[in-house]
Image (tube, rainbow, N blue to C red; front, side):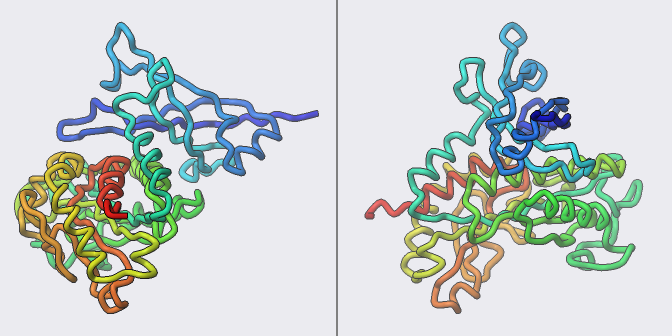
Length: 357
């Protein structure tokens, strides 16, 4: 007899109709669903075909009109819900489809998947640095009511209750990601009070997987903050003035760059990125112009420049890469913290393709 197990499936997707300045907002809803013991084992092994399609009211998320409101949720990746951590909850990341089964216009994942398959010989790998701000009553943690804290300087990678705000949330988030099997590689306190960063990906993680995991880890972070009675914002510039904005730097490599890199190969990629700069900036995050001022470790949004160990450039090539005979990676510093990684990694993937090969 094949027994059944009752699971709580949290279907997560990317919607619209967020607060002002948000180009997307994370949505989710819970489905109580029974699976046979055999199907539970399949799900644990990564087989998402055992999960059903579901639907939602797209007219309430800015993704459909009221007279044709049904949008379809198609599971694409599932991990243990280590925020609830109750042994029966699963986070199910979904693509949004139209009722006829074709990708919804807000679904940018399918384009990336196709491009990654076509260019699989590159073995492109990404590491993403997600900056965010923990907010309480509309102000970052560490900002006093009606005023401002001391200027930036003491807060980056700091310790102590007078300069590090929200570490309990960031570390709880890391623990949840580790338990869920996310390729999370670290976290640190950032330059502005209440600002933190976590990193996902690495030299073996391709663009689709790292993008899926970024969305899942974002949802986990939002839920953990919710449990602590605060909010998290991925806005590019949540506090105007002489305070750092929030970016999402992309660390990028290919098999060739990692193993047989040369200065000329890096320069060739930089040339292609320069040609695509204006096009790529269109998907590099809402309100990015407020963050990219040419100051506070940012470049100009209007011009492309690259440099070695230079955090004021569009793209930084780490000095370690140069010292390792130009074998390594580069860091695209232009993306804002609010980006859709399916769009940005796809844009960078196009620049990695050598048209002469």
